[in-house]
Length: 274
Image (cartoon, rainbow, N blue to C red; front, side):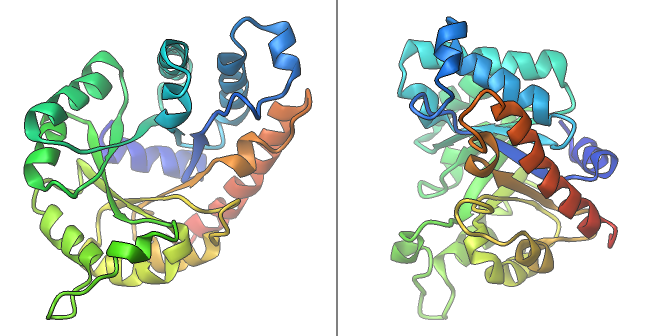
């Protein structure tokens, strides 16, 4: 998917919502185990069908699938195929946080962009340019580089400063933006660090930002928009638990839709300003 495709989808749907498919087998409604031999996929399918017109992206977190072994990988593949076949306008993110030496990264890139048809993959920048470049060789595919995360441990390293007062996450942004373009690179910036988005926009004014942490993690959509939105929107705001686990009963898909619609309606108001 190209950047222009993504912008057009945002404008058409009046939404920059990304729904996180962090599907935990211990949290999905119990009745699914009685009515389906593949309850995890049935859960994903129902969530997708209920929310596809309200969001522009889905983000499966691979840890929730890898933890189930081969069964989990099969569910992941079927989920991606289902989105592709039924909602081809969706931007699909592999939340994998990969990052290794070049030849290993090349295999990760082949996994997510060749074997599986993801649009993008989250990548850790710690090992530098040669660990990221292999992902950038695929046309119309995206690297989403970790820049400033929403967890408490972000303060362990990401805010450390050099002698010139430059923070580590700022160094990551300034260096890595030379590896690709705003047509094939995005950055993860946590919603709980929304006040930092203004400074981040000074470094990367035109890149899309994937912003987790809104909803259950306490991040504010209004603050994210205030500091992070640019003239093209430039945001994909992820919500996972607040939407997909809105109910544990048979109405779980309807409840997920209601939560997603609340977010979409708020986003529609913000989009009027651009």
